[in-house]
Image (cartoon, rainbow, N blue to C red; front, side, top):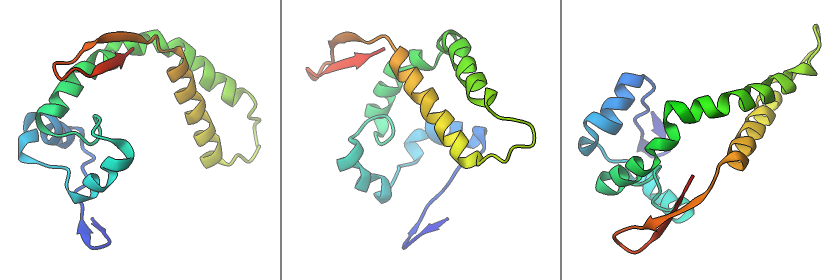
Length: 131
């Protein structure tokens, strides 16, 4: 895909994403476009590469485990049901607006319900905060 003067590879197939991000991650780099985002987002999981990415991914892995999703499922399902309970048959709904609103509620709910605890310092001396 072209984005101005740059060519960008976009992967949508789960097997391709796994290949690029996990199996053969050392064969790929995020590129100049991502590097322009570093001042805004830092070198977190989204923008980190190589060993830094692997370390952050290991630290974040428990947050994406099946138990975390099971723990949150009932609350998130309740939010979705509450959001759609006001919809009426035959009513015209701005789906884009409704989905944005529901997504923000889900994000806020998930963020609010996380239990934060301080983790030990990293080898570089930085303190990490994880749920």
